[in-house]
Image (cartoon, rainbow, N blue to C red; front, side, top):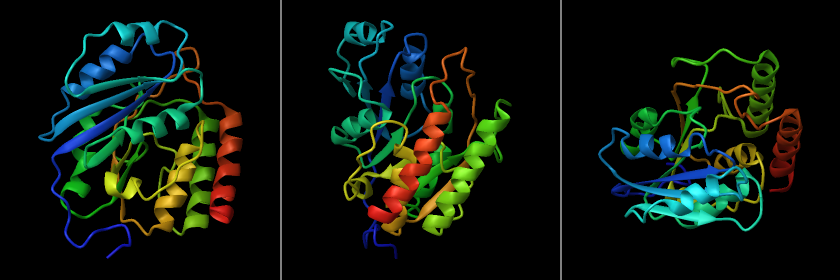
Length: 241
């Protein structure tokens, strides 16, 4: 049994969906609707964290009527995606957490396949896989190969055999997340959480998901600088915790 697992699996009643948001005025309402209608039997809790958007997203979220099961949190300055995810994690109450990007690259219709290994007591964490099994948009050659290199390095450092470390769709048992101290503010969340769940010897599964990637013209935010930062974070968190 992994160090992360408890002797008796908990009863899963609620899925908490953390949605970090920055300048997604065009998509945030569709993302909320898609999450609310995702085909799962668990109750849903949405924790939306606006990271000081400047395109009207913030005002749009503030104008939404109060809705049971939806928490809307506001950063008072732009702190980065990782910081927004940490804020969301601090406010979840469900037994399982999924991180949902606000840009429609990932489809909440994949929630059942992401949740299944956890619900059956087989996994502590589940990673989506964008490139094997599900439909995915064909985009940037260099992004794909940078992802392969970072995944290879991650596997080398953690002794895992992941196919897609940088994927944004990850599900976790909340009791596992509570044992991890996260510190990354920007896109370092992916390498940091991977190194730390591996250190806990969590049971990690991968499942195929659909991926509807965006171009930079359509609003994609991650750049080559974040790839270099991911390399730094992998080494930092492996060597120094």
